[in-house]
Image: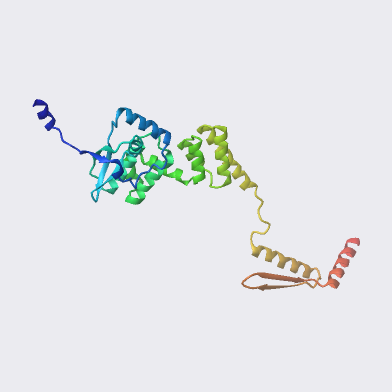
Length: 283
């Protein structure tokens, strides 16, 4: 009797329900996209031997149970052959449910950095949050959210290599300093094949960036920077020939498509001027 009175003093924050596993709908806001079947088998074996120690969380939409947190546990329970699973009902609208799902996954070590970043991006986009608001909801610094989102600049191929090779988020953040393209992919492959740590990867990226700057500085400048400069040079050359006694003429025709500059030099006056110049030099 005393025990019952003591229990009655405590508040209930949710109800534990037994719900058929095949009736629980997947969470559309689930950020995790990959599930290791081997890990699920391990969890299923543990559930089979010890039972499900932690219920999953669900909310109800149109009287249908929708999973909020516990995707791995639900999948493993199905593998273990459980027909029903204990669930805690939480009162949450779509925004709150998405947040709870993301937080639950972020607290687990086996979620890769790109899945985390995609989850944060979806949370911000769908529910109209700022980075600062998202960081407050997730209990982390705004710079952490910004850094997570930055790695989404990497291509799908680059992401897959990073995950496959067991590289870290810091490796990813180092790589995005390089512009997208063959050089960034080549740098990633060098990092993966050489098993470079973050410091070594940063040095490699610095070397690539310095090389790019040197190439820019060594790039030859065009001979003619301005069409007007070229035309003035031609006009000056024609004037010089005229002062030397060569009856040169120049005609410029300009259309919407091009500028045509025609220079005529009579052979007779050109030869005569050349001979006069030779005689002057001989004298």
